[in-house]
Amino acid sequence: MTDIEEIISKLIEFRNERDWEQFHNSKDLALAINVEAGELLELFLWKNADEANKEKVKEELADVFAFAFLMADKYGFDVKQIIIDKISQNDEKYPTVKAKGTAKKYNEL
Amino acid sequence: MTDIEEIISKLIEFRNERDWEQFHNSKDLALAINVEAGELLELFLWKNADEANKEKVKEELADVFAFAFLMADKYGFDVKQIIIDKISQNDEKYPTVKAKGTAKKYNEL
Amino acid sequence: MTDIEEIISKLIEFRNERDWEQFHNSKDLALAINVEAGELLELFLWKNADEANKEKVKEELADVFAFAFLMADKYGFDVKQIIIDKISQNDEKYPTVKAKGTAKKYNEL
Amino acid sequence: MTDIEEIISKLIEFRNERDWEQFHNSKDLALAINVEAGELLELFLWKNADEANKEKVKEELADVFAFAFLMADKYGFDVKQIIIDKISQNDEKYPTVKAKGTAKKYNEL
Image (tube, rainbow over all chains, first blue to last red; front, side, top):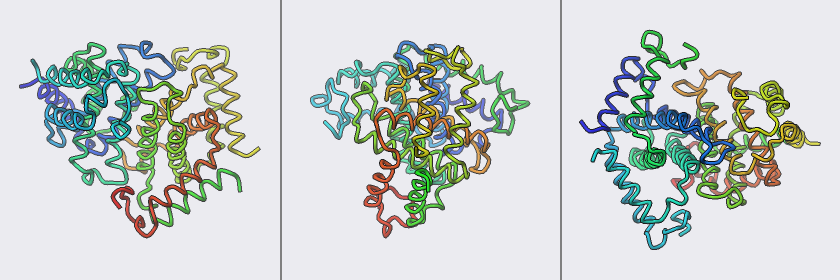
């Protein structure tokens, strides 16, 4: 079992013990990712990057990951593969020769 | 190399080729996770769960993962470990005997 | 007619001409607010506060307002009143003597 | 004084009594809008539209409005005008003849 398979398996075990799959349709999982992303963002609000509480960042980031993995599982996506595919796409959108050292979006390069 | 180490290594390679580490402070990574989570959410807007475009969900979810992995790397978090730790915490907040079959928050159980 | 009544009336006219009320349940309006808030946030991503494009900020902020006003209308809320009520609540949570000059949350004061 | 001017004036009074203008740069206001939008969204998580707690929706929506008005003030935007301008733009992007009764985005019409 890869580490990602192990993570997903533990998340599903936790979910199924509580009979929560009934709530976890893909739309509400997208909501959950946003809610957790917002809680993560709050840790940086009115602050410099280095002032966020690291322990809380760890917890909120774990929540973002948890719902992201559950959504990947819901759709049957291979997490490593979809990231590799996205990197390939971005390789074309952001060629190094144009994108190097600039934070511009691809449509402004 | 585990799956997760391989993902992070590819993301960092992509980032470093473009000299983007300078922009990737933890606060802006939290913003990026929210921006991508919002784009994922948009795919479900005004729709039922099963009407979202699967191909686009794949791409936007990959973006959420990408910035989440980069943030984990920035803090030196072990992704598998922080999720396992969060599951343990949630095991206490949501005991199966109380949480089974209900979507209530822990403070309403 | 007050300013706010005029805004809401124009938004509803635009919506009804397109027969969009059927999509505007309160849950999807909450999604829409998040989607637009994410687009607003993107304008600041990897940037200093003063580097965001003012014209685009204007447009994305208008979108946030539009769906917030439509949600207020959906629930029959008086926008001025709910803000005044919230300020009163916050007056208690953030007494000036404790909250002055600090960005801490009320539960950390 | 219009009702919007009155709202903004009360928000600024609350802010200035606490000496919080120093934290309210436009980037952090964009974060705040997202954080509050996420809290609003959470009220609908795992629920049907009509199951959200109306009293809490009122509070979280008021928070979204509060930071949106503060951002409008920060940029010197006239809230009524920017919404009217956005409606005009959308009138062109979503002509009634094409957009009537469909939730498609303008680039899919």
